[in-house]
Length: 399
Image (cartoon, rainbow, N blue to C red; front, side, top):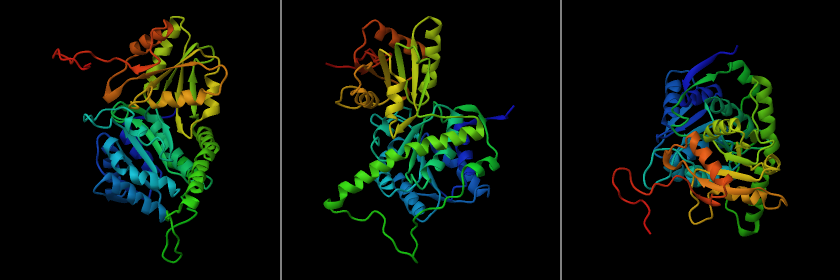
């Protein structure tokens, strides 16, 4: 039996990055990602990790340092959350346009205001169209595994794109879970040293990210979009190879009891595990519920997704961010667009929930299912609104 070690998930993430032999870590503290870079700083200080640990003055600088180091041929890593991502977003866009395979862990946290340090997906949805490969993980083992998988994908010479790993803040990052570690020899077989195609070097001058006139800008954006779309088979290959080595296989879309399901929950991140427990409970009651965990967010796995929901009557999409002024949340909107061309498509119900760290227990999933089954659910809406502030008698919602 393979040995498992109890670790805080943030520490498991740092251990995985250490095993990746990164050359540079750019670090700026923000809750709840700080434990990852704190741990990495100890590894560097103790000589366990031979890397440059750069303490920068802002998240904008953190990504800027990664751009410079990656362009010079160094395997680079950073992580952030919430407002930190908002501040670095200018350079996040540039990183993708320059085709630099930086890996970043985004420990998801609400964007202010009001100020919240708790978890939802408003931060990642703010950079939905930044050009990075983006995926969501559900538990500590998946966080650990995807450090290696992400560099394997990003550094592939047929990809050369940055990759964003989304893990839920506190709900996942600060939990202690049993993690099956992987021997260094296995990692070395899976993840070779990074050999860049192009590097900045004073002996061979080249330009990256030059000014583009209107005559070429559209073509540059088309090429960038094509590169992201064409990364899909390389992502599948990296998952397959990791599964062959470890026995843990990952897929863009993972399903549970969807074969005969009339109503399927669609969830991203750690909420998919709670949704799975709810589906298990409903199945025991004879209810035809299923779950689809959307792991790969960009590039969107359109064909696999549509095939997975074929034959179902309803999709309950659990959004953890508000798309202000739009009909429903960002994930529900994407899924409606994805299904539009199908002649027989399920009805999509968008439920925005879990904002600012609010819990969504198993019973809430069952209640949502029953609302849809009874035909009483709105097509889109925020689930679980309180009419009064706790203990104050003051209304939250004013007409």
